[in-house]
Amino acid sequence: MHAQNIPSVGKNYTLEIANWNLEWFGKTAPGFGPNDDAKQQALVLKTIQNADVDIWGLCEVSEKKAFDSMLLKLPNYQAVLANYLPEQKTAVLFNKNAFTLLDSKLLGTENKDSFSTQRFPLELRLLPKSNIGIDTLRIIVIHLKANTGTDSAKMAAYNSRKRSAEWLKFYLNGLPPNNYTMVLGDWNDNLYFSIFNNLPSPLIKLQTLDFKYQFLSKKFTDNKQGTTTGYPDPIDHQLASQALALKYKTDSSFVWRIDQFISNYSTTCSDHYPVYSIFNMYGLEVNNENKPKQIIRYPNPASKTVFFENNMTKQQLMVYNSLGQVVFETLGTEKTEIDISQWAKGLYFARITGDGLEEILEFIVE
Image (cartoon, rainbow, N blue to C red):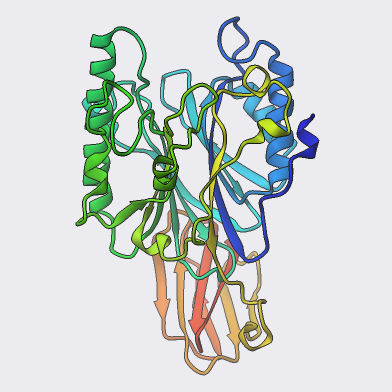
């Protein structure tokens, strides 16, 4: 069986978010992932092409050249690759027809004790290009320290994962309320009890009742469903903020056993399976009653003045720069004129809301 038989996961009017550890993707030295690197790269490419998932959080991208080569064959996706020092890097692929990248950064770099591997979390903020029922979407990809080596090394790794979880909880608690955030990746441990000596999970502090986030992948633990080819414990997880979890399609989290489509999967592709969740979104085109009223912005590009025209009775107009900062805000009229003559050159996003509708338009200041 071959990867071209992999079915599509993507659906209209839903948001699909997946994570996948690619096991030393691009690393050519013997003993690091599959021996046939060209075959592995072809299988990963075909899987992503066929799956049609909106957002991928990837781990163990070990060769930028191989990653860039794959990206050239994925014209509907944009990517950010983590720029930390360790070889096994995280990355995010997202559908650029659905989202615009506001910014990206590494987290926790000032607290190396919390991330002993120095594989710091990679955070992206994505702005939906249409009304999907959410505002800015925050994606954080992590790859915590693995449970390898002697017992003392495994104990050190356990404590590293515990410190990472504690730091992550502190960071997430500091985000604005009602944020739309997904933390996903290879957590290298289970949720209730650790894979090391059956200790309490190092991730347990992320599961307290007062914490406004929830593991959508909890069902993997409850069902004793592993996410790797060699072990029964799930170690690849998805943690969603409360606001995002409210849009979660019930019971949609899935360990995608693509080994049924790829022969000798564990030796040709990866030692982890992809996992994904589906979220109920709504587009303005879902039914006629909710279709957007006509909104026009001109000229584009612009250098002195930009106009926005629409027929909404009540509206708010907010303009963001490429860093996601609000640079202009007004209660708009049917024709709003903005003086941009002193603005920095670059890409901007106008969010117009009114009459129960929302629209986001891009424009360029030149």
